[in-house]
Image 1: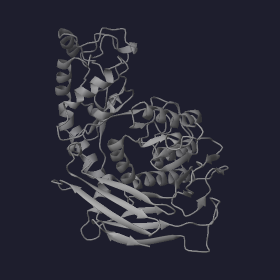
Image 2: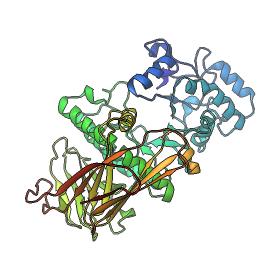
Image 3: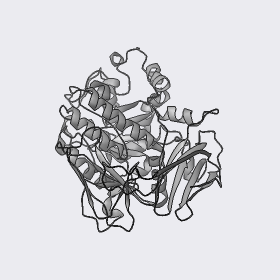
Image 4: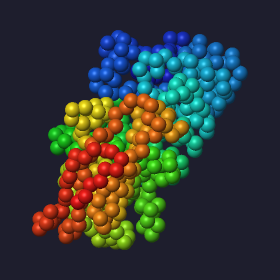
Length: 483
C-alpha cells in the first residue's frame, strides 16, 4: 500500500497536508537494498515478477497542494464521498493536471515499475476514467497500458484498465457472491475483473483460501490480496495439503494462459465475453451465478464450506465431457459431488465438439516463452479435442506488450479445425505482417477424447482406449493429423 512510496498513510491529514510527506518518491525503509529502482529491476530479472505500485487520487504534500491550488481547477471542490481527503483530491478531468501528474509519475516507469494500482478514486463519477487518461501519458504509444482499479465506469476497458471487486470480507458468503459480481461487471462493460482471493477484511482459513484459489483459475484475472495483519495468502505459508492444492490451482491457471489469451482476442473480434453467464449461450438455462462459462468450459466451483457441488448440464443436442477426461455425460442431467476432498474444488465440463489448448508447465510467462522458443527442444502446445462433433479453436499469439494488433500487424493466428466424420485435425496458420521477433509455439501435441461409456465422475471406462495422443507435430499451415 502506501509504504512503497511514502513512510505513512495520509488518512489523518488535514486539507493542508504535511510538508514532510512524499507523493511521488520511494519509502526507502521498505526497500531492503536502499536502491528501489535496482530492487524492482531485480524482481523482474531474477524472479520474473512485474511490480505495480498503489496510487491515491490526491496529494498529501503541503507544497504540492499549494501549487495545485494555485492552478485553475486542479483540486476538486470538496464534499467528496471519501471525506478523509477532503480538499486534497485531484481533478483528473483537467487536461493540464493530467499532464503535470503524468510528468511527476514518469520516473516510476523509467525505473521499472510496470503498472499502477489505482485505489480510493470514488471521489467523482469520472475520476477513475480520467485518472487512467493521465497515466496513459506515461505509456509509449507502441505499448499497452495496464492498471488495476477499485471502481470503474463504462469505457475504461478499452484503455487497458482492469478492476477488482473491492475490499471484500474473508468469509464463505463473500466467496459465494464473487462469481455474481464478476459476471455482473462483465455484462455491464468491464470484462477484465478480479477479486481479493481469500478475502481482504479479516483472516481467512486454509480451506476457504484454497477453494477461492480454484475459483480464481477461471475468472479473467487471478489475484490474491489481504490486509497487513492477516496471514498473507501465499501457498507456502499454509499447511501442506492446502498449499499443495493451491499450487495445483496455480499450475492450472498457467496452463490455461494460451486459452484465455486467445479468448481475449476473440472478445475483441466479436464481443463475446471471456466469462459469461450460462444463459448467454444456453438461453433456457436457469438463472444462476454459481455456475458460469469460461469460454466453452462450464464451471461450477466449490463455494460452500460443506464442499458440496451441484451442476446442471445444459439440455443440448451435444453430450458433455468432464474436462481433461473421456467421461461422457447426458445433457439435462445434474452432476453432484458431496464433501469434495482436496484438491477437488470444482466441476468443469465441455460439450462434444470442443477444442481446448494448454501451455506446458511453467513458473512464469517468461519461463513459458523461454520453453517454447528453445531451439533444440521447444515445449509443445497441448491441444485437447473433445470428440462427437466438429470443433474449431483459434490460437492467438503476439508479443504481449505492444498495441500492434490494433493495426492488424505483428501477430499470428492458428486455426485448429477438427472434422468429426473424417477424424482429422487441420491447421490454418496466418502470420499477419510479423516484423518483430517474439516466441511462437513451434510444435503441438494433440489428445483426442473419444466417447466413453462412463457416466459417473469417479468411474473409468477400461474396456477400450478412449484417449488417443499423437505428436509432436509442427505448427505449420496445412499440417493435418489423422486419428
